[in-house]
Image (cartoon, rainbow, N blue to C red):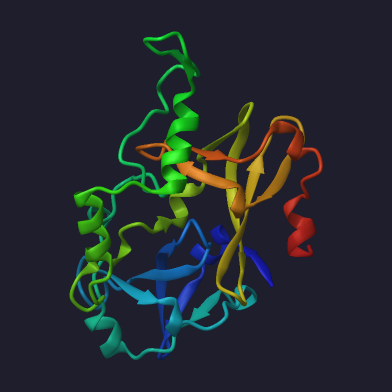
Length: 238
């Protein structure tokens, strides 16, 4: 079953008969795997969002407006806490510097031309060894019960909505939504709102990286790819 991530964010999590608002969904932008959902538990613990691993959630039930969670209230109360301050806009591909505002081509000291955007994409895909990054990766392995920084390197689903997407030949449109395989718990497609073709979908595998600050996403795609791309309803089955 395919569903939009915006619909999942609008559901309520059920925990032992209680209904809790879902404030965020965290996923791995490389594999698409859903990792955590953040539950609004302000009635239980003031000012808190509880993080629950997707290992403990069942298949969502959009027709009933709920997403069942297989933990008790005590477990929720002891879960790691999350706030907006715990996650900052970042380049999901892990780049340490942003070249997105540079000119499309620059001329080197010996007359050669270089494409900053292509350079950044290559760095993002191949990885970059740096002590600070190594420390961040070590932090991400800290048990959730101890360190809420386990979210480092994950994407916030809501932040993708409304983000502009660029491809090989310029702007492709705006990311209107994300499609989620609700059985595999995996983001599979981006839903783009385009100027000429309306809503079109591209596989998440086309994603390359997000510019520093989250201003836009860069995809391995061109405008011509949108001509043959399916509409979201064709994948959802509506």
